[in-house]
Length: 411
Length: 85
Image (cartoon, rainbow over the protein chains, first blue to last red):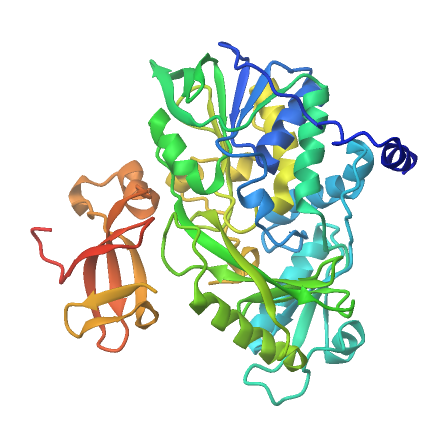
């Protein structure tokens, strides 16, 4: 704070840069492809926890320009499978201390997260999730309309809507955070420890000799390396194809939008799986809204009217009082969807080529934990227990981690 | 807005259709092992370009194959499935 005031008064502009630019070296110990929260967190924890600082993060655009800057910033751990709950819970705990750790204000607001149930089968799934969550020590419980009304009086809790609200899964530690700040904080922390962040550096090929990674070709030159981490979300299959590794991933756009600014009135996060909608109010007063992924695979970042119409209709079903609120802007990001709605982390058949992909619509909330654990995997060459269920070989083994009921609003 | 041509009904709004995923060839049951079956079930090309894929037209209830560009959304061809591909 004092620093901010001092800087404001001394007239120096612009603010000092938070990370440096470097020449691309021709050799790095570890190359991370993708400068989003996952790639930068992995670089940060490699340097902080394992002393591996000869690391390059390659980003084809600017850092945080993909899903890390396009998500709706919701953080929670009330998943359905024990593997998923344990994993996301560690992420929530890391997020709770991250601002202090990075010395960067992330505006983390744990305001509570409500997942609404509109029919008996949803109530049953919520009850199931609450039980699994509580067993893993996560604060999560089923609540009924009287308590929902106290937490969020704006919801239409009458029996008039086509899909009346019967109950909700209440997850008090769920919250929202400033997503750009998370990316910048990790980038600054990694840079301070010697990691090279290369923006506007696109990967054009990966060299593999005898099933082993030997280098990465980029638009700015070739790098020799023995370890490559693919953390490229929607573009994950294109990068893996370069190394000859096929993935069970399809790319779907996920759209979101914000409304004009309103006075603060909504202090919880509202999600409805049946109605495919989630909404929270940002610190600027905008309603941040999202829905399910687009119904067909695509690499296009175009916004569609069909999405906006569907989302608005469903949101008005929940909160009719928003009928005259205007939409300010709309955008899309690319999601790497897997068949079981769980990510893929760890080793591949090509030695030295690692993946942290398949993050679909739930990648941002897992950035810290997957960065930390992938760094551990790289440093020790062993899969941490927390990551084992999410290995690539689970598809061939028939051991899927089915998170469809809890990971995504669209199914 | 994406328009698709149902081989039965002609050009319609994409909202009338359901996406059926990229067209993959099912291996002969006698040749299948664990790995090839997992390939068929899960692995996808996820092309950034022209893709051959399944669509279902809800009003008339027919499945057909389309060739669509996954970035520009241009649809070059739609037809009923035939064994020749």
